[in-house]
Image 1 (spheres, helix red, strand yellow):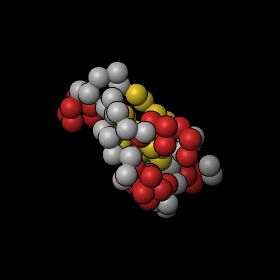
Image 2 (spheres, rainbow, N blue to C red; image 1 turned 180 degrees about the horizontal axis):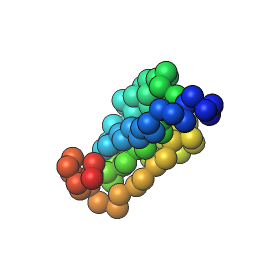
Image 3 (tube, rainbow, N blue to C red; image 1 turned 120 degrees about the horizontal axis):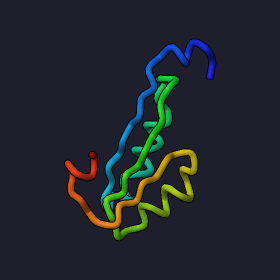
Length: 79
């Protein structure tokens, strides 16, 4: 990261996921193509029963993954 990038605010993009393995790769690939230089992506998995967690672990090792042991719904999942 350059000094110019450090001057920009750090942004965290939170993707709340629940059983969206069909859409998750496209979403994460699109977010990774953003031209903003100072951001991180966090996927919060809301206790999916599909292979969403495995997709993130296998294909997106640079994205932080938080796995909830229960589905907390939209509002609590984002919090």
